[in-house]
Image (tube, rainbow, N blue to C red; front, side, top):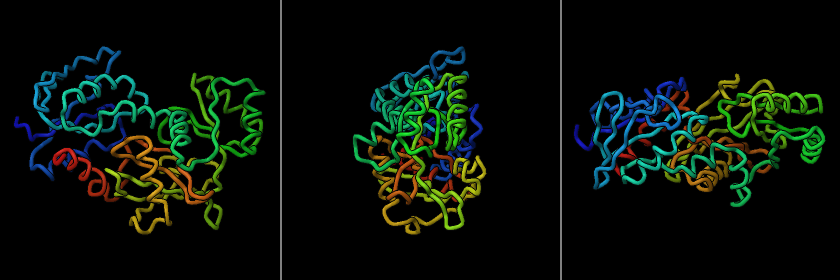
Length: 310
């Protein structure tokens, strides 16, 4: 294969569905099929880790996996689920050391965005607006109650590492707090509680925005509206989704998303945030899902193009 062919490195066990969108974008931009390799072959700590990475020189890398040998100067990394990212870090370091063109090799940025307690620490350092948050690690009932009271008795609980709004709870009383604590203890997870942002529409529905940022520029905006005020405000938890033009966002929201992305050091990110409470960021996603509308045009194609023209 020629050096201009792309390698698309994703976790083939993921059901998120962005891998095919990336392949469509690669075909559109290069006129050829990308070489798709399963990232699990390059993850440490499992029997599936049979892949090899070797720097060839001049920004070129050789990847061996699945009985194939691929030499390229561009590797598109995407759709690595949060719980698998620590095992993928060694691959990222090897790719970065090789000098290959890739936007997915910054281990520290990925970790800071994936581990939400680290995200809060970075936001605090850099002055990124967010709701007051307390991290809890197997707290005593008294410690959990004290943190709950400090945040006003109306909070959202979430795991430090999670995905898709799973294991996220709206907590407004001590019984709910105790149930959340038991849930995270059973899973062996550290967790956070953050003060409710009161991000409601006039008719009482939750709403927030997802802004995708690439290379310091907002490229996609979506509004999510959740009819259940006690459920996470994202599509996989029942929220509706409306794609917006960037200039349809409330003033300052695009700029806040760019600030949050810069704080974490990510070249690409999906930022969840609200205009209420003065404008606050909830979290930053390393690999934002594309949704059903314009995802290839607004995210996949620009992301792939950045690997071709860097």
